Length: 184
Image (cartoon, rainbow, N blue to C red; front, side, top):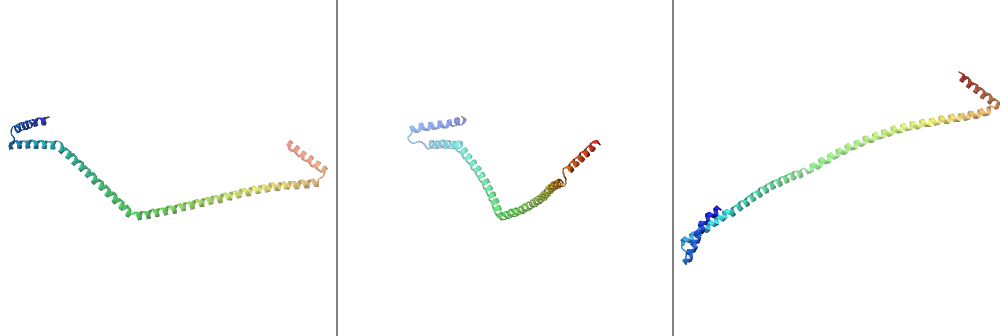
């Protein structure tokens, strides 16, 4: 508001110059200089009011963009340097990875061989145990079969060797033995 009030005398001078210009056909050089001064002050005022802040904001924006661009360029250069170093070390990294894989493969092969040996030892032990168990079972069956055959042979011989009177005497003798054992 104060600025507008300060321009009021200028507008008054301009109005007075316009009135005198109507009365005279050709304005004097003084009025031309006053008119030029008013236009110059108005132009300077408008430039100071509107154009300078816009230019300052634009300058700040450009400065910020330049700073960001420099930071981006530095980051890109760092990334390029990192990738270049990785590419130069690529062969050695591949070689080290292969060596590590070979070492791991050898360790795994040894581990598998040890497990296989352990499993074979367990199978052999289980086989021996199973054979021993089957042998004992076969021997027990053979003994039982032998006893059955011996009893059958003894019964057949006893049946052919004894007559009914001898069998009766044997049964009586057996019963008497049982009674004696019961008496004790």
